[in-house]
Image (cartoon, rainbow, N blue to C red):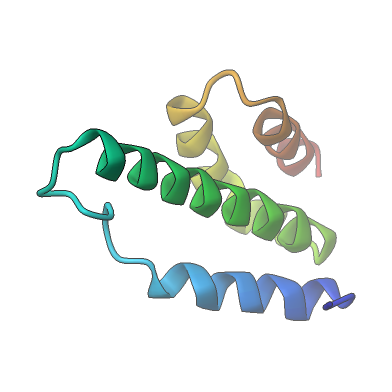
Length: 90
């Protein structure tokens, strides 16, 4: 496991850069929809972990726009709201 927040943020960014669009966008079956939802939830989890690591390294201003738009997409996510409040405060 990576304990250095700067290295962790860079690794999360590299992983997120590999992601391209919505998985299985042209397919619509119950099973594919569940897989897509699970993959999108996993990606969102990586984004949240990256945000935590980036905030620990002082990248508050850099994350403001992304956090604001992410909260518009996920308005009930308390972890994301907390990350945005921390970025705004600092």
